[in-house]
Amino acid sequence: MKLINHESVVKRMKPRLSKNSISKWIFFALTMFVLLILGVLLYRIFSQGLGYLDLQFLQSLPSRKPENAGVYAALIGTIWLMAVVTPVSLLLGVGTAIYLEEYAKDNAITNFIKVNISNLAGVPSIVFGLLGLTIFVRALALGTSVLAAGLTMSLLVLPVIIVASQEAIRAVPNQLREASFGLGATKWQTIVRIVLPAAIPGILTGGILALSRAIGETAPLVVLGMPLFLAFLPKTLLDSMTVLPLQIYNWTGRPQVEFHALAAAGIIVLLVMLIIMNSIAVLIRNKFQKRY
Amino acid sequence: METTTATAKIINPQEKQIVYKTSDLDLWYGENQALKKINLDIMENEVTAIIGPSGCGKSTYIKTLNRMIELVPGVRTSGEILYRGRNILDKSYQVEELRTKVGMVFQKPNPFPKSIYENVAYGPKIHGIRDKKILDQIVEKSLRGAAIWDEVKDRLNQNAYGLSGGQQQRLCIARCLAIEPDVILMDEPTSALDPISTLKVEELVQELKKEFSIIIVTHNMQQAARISKKTAFFLNGEVIEFSETNKIFSTPKDKRTEDYITGRFG
Image (cartoon, rainbow over all chains, first blue to last red; front, side, top):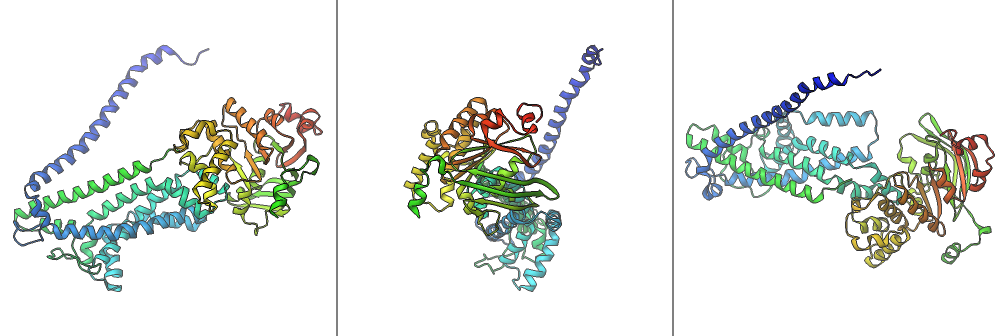
């Protein structure tokens, strides 16, 4: 006796197939919705800010007169900030991930630490601002310096870098480690020559995403008390500075409409920086991309 | 000393020495005992096959011979394994030193995501050989030794993942030869390969045994019969029978061995 009636299967086929084709359009519509919002946002910014975006805008210090004001100080400040955050957060983050994945014993304490690092990634950025204020600005007396801001931002993005690096290291097949150990390699040699090269695309993806976040963050720097208006450039790590998001925040808070346009132009500069960084990430990733 | 080790390679069969002497080896994974009172003497310059059904401990045993088993958390051992007279289970025996003398070929081909050249040169490089000329020589000698030189000599700088599965496995054998080991451990080296690649690896093993001692774990009894001089039959973590391969396959002493090789179980 046959348990499946093929005629009724064919009859039921139609609704199944139409569901199948509808689902494709639903997902398409969702994607379009997201793109639409992004488009509106970009349109608003570009239509407002593009007129103000010129060489003079990039080369001028902030000013009380909108026609003289520029993002130079903030742009240079952001570059200084990146110069601190990139090495500090990558060294600490990748180092921690290597320890947790390659060396730490798989026990309750390690798991507790891993869970808590993931939790840290969800802590509001303003809390990291308070931490930075207490430790770097006050206890270590670094003031509102490049270093204090950079270290605070490093702490903020550290959990993301650690988690991404852990994932990347875990994704390296164990058989590669075995092959290396089997030839008499030490653990250190195996990590440096086999595990890290294979994990680099994943580590960089996470790292650049984290650094992009550091570029755009405002709240922790406000808490640190970073100046919103600064008419000079930092010369050392201990000088005060301002950064792009702070400058934008400052301009949007002003009553004059011209400053709002300046803020839009500042946002465009920030977006361009992000695009450049993400492109670099993609390039590096493609260069190192390996199949297993 | 140099001369004696060099001449030790040319010995007549009667003077063959024991390369691995295993005495009363027990091994536990946590609470599970995987190996029970193993006693085996493995001779140099011959092929020793280890057969048995899945889960009988044959892979565990071969991984103990280069202490790869230590990568598994919670492994404990007792008893001793003398390699050339020194107990390798003694913690004072540097595992990196052991593994430069005992190479290993794994079940699945596992080349590094590097070029063919870099794969073979990896071993010598981690042991501190930097001279490009010497490395070139080692790479060519090893690839020739693994019977894959002619297939790859024009594309040494291409990624090893571009090779077929059988070629990858022979590359892994070449990589193993590059550290000029004394013993080669093979853990089911042909189980992931097609019949023709399998045949090539088997022919290679016949060549390699002239220079190396080979211990091979295999699921395939015909393979054991074809290529090995001696065979050990493992069952439930014990050595049931260990003798000349032709004796094991023609006149097994133990009923369980007979049942297994005639295909009644396993």
